[in-house]
Length: 257
Image 1 (cartoon, rainbow, N blue to C red):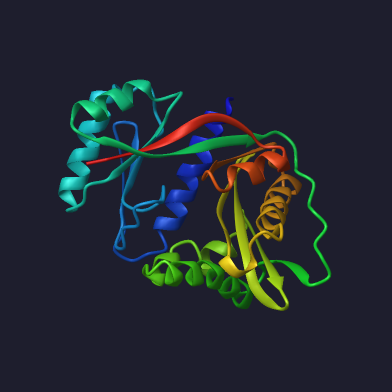
Image 2: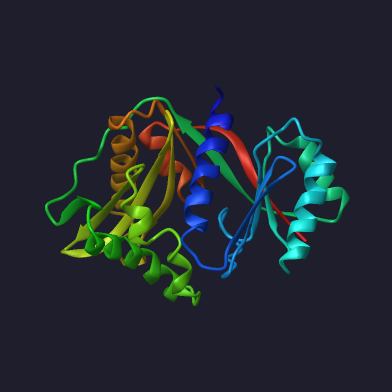
């Protein structure tokens, strides 16, 4: 199985888990597409008001019609997240109906557990094992949303105890001087894992905390039986993951109306 196939499986499992935690969010699966109509749309994420392909045997035209119909039914224009290397036909179909290309991210994979960096004496690494630690995880993300003048409640669908304490989720928080400073989670699906929701507070950056929580989360998934892990990286995060041993296997482009 390719990294692209593994990424599809783990990201779809994550999307279903996350969306199920927010009342009013609707998930649709049709014509080879997983589609999410969110209560609180958030443009930059793969998990809010978005569509992603999971079956490439379905024609691109049929898939795009399903995306348009689902969006219209729920009063939203969904973002399409397409694999640059695996979804050329879907990209062509999206452009043919007027969707435009936006940000491009990197899909990356690794086939062995990364080494966990040694934290400094002022840093404490903790696995999320109870509701209090789950709230610390969410606090890292809420702080960044508030700083960006975005709705902090958009973190609730992945930053809740129901997600973070799920037995298939390996979530970690790094504390800097006893304050939550960075967080990441890996979701294990069958023998693959996906790394999601890596964040470091602005005031705590350039200390290696993002790499620390990322490596810990992925290592936790490998220790529990995963044989590979994938992620989708921003330009800011990609160099960090390359140093951990991840390699690019595709681009991931956002298309929107």
